[in-house]
Length: 113
Image (cartoon, rainbow, N blue to C red; front, side, top):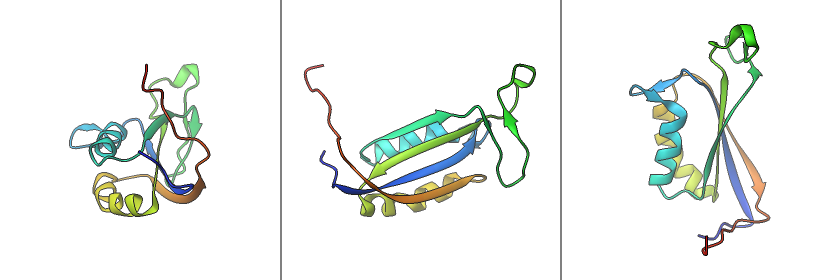
């Protein structure tokens, strides 16, 4: 797959404990993005953050059971991002979704590996 130089990134902020149909929402988002043939998706686990409810989530040793922040990013062509938004909207019950223009400099893989 070739990505255009001018692409878009969806950045989806959720929590570790957020679920969609009983499964972690970040896992469902990545699986759906792959099923839709998106260029790529990555989920990152945060160590500290807060959202709309202003409750701080942290990974400090005494608070290991807290609901840590999770960020899932998807990069693809603007029209493919647009087509994915209704599916994403159905999955997100709580969180933040942002969309921004990005410039793709490198997108490749080694087929020999």
